[in-house]
Image 1 (spheres, rainbow, N blue to C red):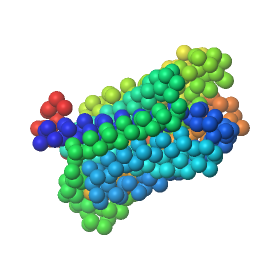
Image 2 (tube, rainbow, N blue to C red):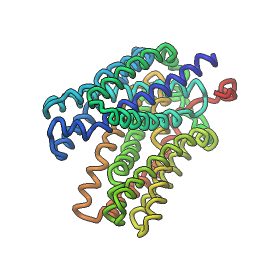
Image 3 (tube, helix red, strand yellow):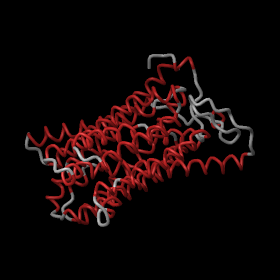
Length: 414
């Protein structure tokens, strides 16, 4: 049992790196594609919304398909489609073709995102201990790989379309090669307490709930999943705001140079990655609810420090705390959604991820709108309020099903 399970875990890491690499390859080529197509920044911003809409649609399609067909079918299929679609933005020659390319690529990327997260839920359940945050950390590794590949290809004089095609082709091979060690089927529905009992919060010590009727249990599960989705929207709105406004905050509010300001986002991203590498061990010891509650509270302290701190060092400390606090929140929410009912893990993760993705896209725009009314740093107070609300709402994880300890697997070195 241990060797196939370890193989499935490694394959999940591979797909998370793959997804991050594919998205990162597109992101680092945005300036070149914008120049090739000849669109303004404003037009490009509108076109990027289509990428988000496509991703949202792909999530809603791939989630139920993963439940029906199994991750071994859907994960590699979406990986292949995403790899093939990566070249499309590089081939675009006008705004219309770029719009279609981004819609298709977003759809495929969203499908891969949800299906691999659904598979990660099943791997985590089989291990009987938290492993989800580690998967999310490797997504960031993919972005770094994409940046390195793009830098090397550009230095060698390669055209963007060639680089995108090459990355896509290698990704297709990796997606197909990794498919055989994925878990073959969705865990049986009877492995979860959903439908018969309430869940148990790992490490939290809460008692298992009493038996309920199947209909009321389904309604309760659906309600919890939507609450998780709302929390994901708030957390990922905070992430999206940090992605787009951290560097501008240091430059425009605190007067940092362009090179120094770039370290604002770098500090946030590095703290996110470090936090996700540590979050699984902390969740195993203190419980998922504690990671969400205290992580959101830490993020709230960090962004408040950013909003009102008058010095560069307070800004860097604030962005670091913000990233560290947020780092474990999304993995806990995705994990709880999947474990609420493993037989419908894909559909539940797609709801949480989909609404969260809306927040990620809305974050930069919401902060931008607020800057018409207040200063940029004071607009970040909204993020403080969202973090506080998330911390207060973390109790929803108390009733979400999480992996039951399995000592024979948890004691392995894998």
